[in-house]
Image (cartoon, rainbow, N blue to C red; front, side, top):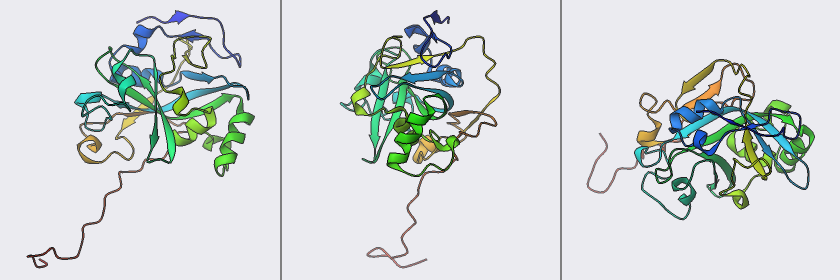
Length: 235
């Protein structure tokens, strides 16, 4: 699937914006192809460009780890629409997570942007992160999905943004001639239940050796209660 050449974007980084059909491929094809690609976000504060180093794939109604597993809702509706859109949600009411919608319209799937390296607009990205927490090094600026959203200045107001428009607020672009390097795969971070099965869903992809890749954390599992239930006795 070919890309569509576009004008160069801010920060003098590669300005080849994929056509919508590029995003319309299967999520497990698009996810690793997003590694090494760029996201540029424009704002009144300035422009920031990030190189993607870690992602996770979610396959909609075929995936128990996906928000779309049980069908369409007001929250996940954009996942059922055309590919190349932004799906932003608020996790546990605490922070935002940013996803790229993939696959054909009507079949929900998306790629979570887990981490990246800020390659343009570092001072602005660092300042945004400092407003919301401690940043001990530049590798931590967008290391993890919540930090990535803060650094890029993305929130629910960007829900549904078109990533294929070169002049838009948020755009994904690639250097088709770049040597991206080797990527690794593994279980998704913090996914509980069947969707957290590492053998069935090794759908986290990251660039090997990249310092901005986040640390793996298994899903939290509530400890089993030691209080006997009514009508039972301890074993």
